Image (cartoon, rainbow, N blue to C red):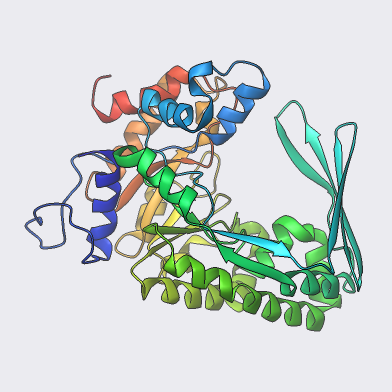
Length: 384
């Protein structure tokens, strides 16, 4: 089996789709058991960090090089394929971006006013963080609503199909839904930040709830396109962390909407994954009771707040677990023997056929040694 066949076999055992043929069924009638645990890694952060440091070998440049990197590492590739839709704002909206030293100032101009955000590049970690979010007060929600309801959404499948063909059996490109699917998660992680979103829930709940409903409806055209798009799997990139969003907010504002979109995608034969790369105690039990096919980027202790065994107990028979190999363990700060023992324990907890995809939770950091990434395949094939 190749990596694509392995991951498809795992999902076929959960919800078989008749348009996929993977070979002879198993004795339990639920489809094939993969010959070994599927292993998929998000190497995008390591890749960009190595490139920023001038350490990325030339053979890994470009689309073919990015695939070659995963092949050399022995890891399946699923991120990031080109999007299947694009958005354009109408003529009433203008945008401006200015760079000042290590900060990028982005401004959106609308007939209802303007929104400004400031992001700062952090050179030590090769990433950016918000210094100032777009939404600062409840009045800004009207501007955000105007922006989301005055855009044109069109499909664009050609680049996705090209990457799908390029990756072939080595991986399976996933379709990314809007990031985030839930408007509340959008506010928490992108547009307002935690403090302002909490203030809106206390002081501007009516305006916030109106915005949530309107933003959900504004994504109807996107989900219509996703439903028609190539690609077997759809990922809800929620960047969910249980101790931030909390069970009450999830239950009230997010799960009913996720269920609606999951049902819409299931009707056209697509599997749905949700990206929960933060803490799990508050979120995973709720997600396991939804119609989600998998929870992706599951991050257990010592980085997260559940053990690998606890993750299995919560999800077993309910949802596929994708992840369980914390990205931090790839750092040289953790001894190689610890990394190897941890990985073997994960594979003992989730043997092949148990509804599991081994994945980095959530990304391999830039300081990781490439040999450690390659070590995972050796352990899977019992060569070490």
